[in-house]
Length: 110
Image 1 (cartoon, rainbow, N blue to C red):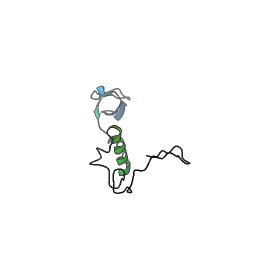
Image 2: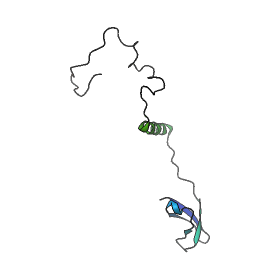
Image 3: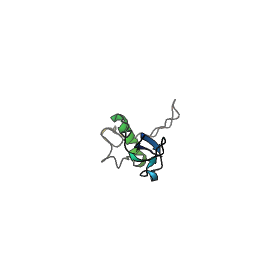
Image 4: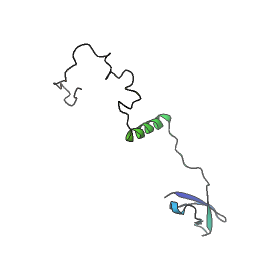
């Protein structure tokens, strides 16, 4: 529930937590019980974060429901990715899949 601010004509300002459905209704002063109108006495509490943190949050939020794929990356992979370029591959047959895992059995070649 949100916290609303009210202005009592006798006692001054006070805050009260109420349901949003009752946001426009007058509030009862806790000191004298008088009906008080709703006012905005303080600025909203906004949090400012650094640009790097904001960009990271935006990227994370975007990737949660519309991640980039190789087809939607803006025309292809970024320059120098090396996965699709034939210029960076050595001439000759394609390398075979690695059958020996070596000293890192959890790593699989692709």
